[in-house]
Amino acid sequence: MKTQLLQHEAAKATSELLVVFAADQQTSKDPNAKAEPVLLSEEAALLSAVKSALSSGEFKAAGSETLLLHAPAGVKASRLLIVGLGKKAKATVHDVRKAAGTAVRFAKPRSIRELAIALPTGDSFPAHATARAAVEGALVGDFDPDTYRSDRKDQSIQDLTILSPAGASQAEVKAGYTEGVILGESQNFTRTLVNEPGNRMTPTVLGQRAAEMCKEAGLKCEVFSTEKLHEEKMGAFWAVSQGSAEPPALIVITYEPEGAPAEPVLGLVGKGITFDTGGISIKPSDGMEKMKYDMAGGASMIGAMRAIASLKPKVKVISVVCAAENMPSGTAYKPGDVIIAKSGKAIEIINTDAEGRMVLADGLTYARQLGATHLIDAATLTGACVVALGTTNAGIFSNDDDTFQHFSTALTTSGERFWRLPLEDEYKEQIRSHIGDIMNTGGRWGGAITAAMFLKEFAEETPWIHLDIAGVAWMEEQKPWIAKGPSGTAVRSIVEWVRTYSK
Ligand code: BES
Ligand code: MN
Ligand code: ZN
View (cartoon, rainbow, N blue to C red):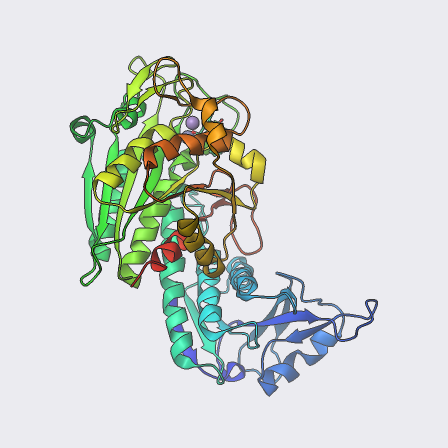
């Protein structure tokens, strides 16, 4: 998708499809009064073009509701699409993001290849955040996962124009738009990686894809394999890798801008299990195909680094992605095995399907060794997190309130939803081992928490955040604004978290 930003009267823009936004405004105090949708624009020509449609009662401006008008009077575009943002009092830029995605996904199957989005105006829609959200939403909406369909028709939008209203600060709109392009494209880059099946996205291939991206983005990238794992005594990472014919990949990406202070150094650690069979503690076959997305945490970090390279925050960032395939075989690690992690801790294996925390344990230790003063990890870590929070919120854990606060701030920009779960010392009892220091599973209860408690042992004293994205990394159903398949959730929040440290 080619994008451009224009400061232009929307009614005078030539386009196959002009997209405008409306909200549901309750005009009377009487709760039984008919809600009346209002157009979020100050342009007289647009207001008059939609007047009869909005008063018809056919369209309520509910979130993602659409109404298409052909040959609208007084408007140069050949079609006008009104997209609802829901209740006006509650509508935010996050609704604009979804609505922009909805518009794109409306256009795609209708052979519309070009569209223009008129940014909404009003107190709830600050120029920077609105421009950014609109372009992010449009880019995210444009992604479809049907890569390998031999009858695939490319329905991608070729040209997108963002139309900035006259009243807005054009500098703010421009800055927001530019960020939105970077974030939207980076989120889609992550989705492209996650979408690939296990046979085509091995640890080695993930390393290659990361290296290619880094070359284009101007980032330093090193990709190591088996030998390095042995050299660095990454026993936990190797334990998972050892059962597969595919060699592991340790992907290290460094962003070191000139003039950045020596500290903080942010460490972005990702789980990159390119396929999770469960290993010897093998998973049931029903739904196992989904486990190709078990590298979504790692792919999120790679996508985040792509965005960071363009946004250029003044802070050092190192990303460590631990990529491996979790397979059962004659060389696989087994329940009962005792594995010495890089940090020196002895891990008693209870279940080889708890492999994500194994690779992350060594990833966290390695990031600390490379100088990270603050850590964040992302992983499709536990089914228990999905049981606890469903697919609306992802889990977040932290050993440090200030670091968590930075992430909370980031969420107000990204619009993503994470819910904090506890990490009290009592939970550690569940993973105490008799033969070694720690067990890799903690029994039935609080599975997302005991997994996080395990990671906490390897973050040690370093301020750290853990994101469990098992329930949100893959969309089981399509939504009006996003396709079914890999969501790229977490990329935007991680990037924003990094930017909160930029001096
Ligand atoms: N990759 C899975 C977690 C997962 C489950 C991701 C569902 C996405 C959707 C992880 O490696 C795993 O197998 N976790 C186990 C842990 C258990 C053995 C303690 C789980 O959640 O069942
Ligand atoms: Mn597993
Ligand atoms: Zn896994």
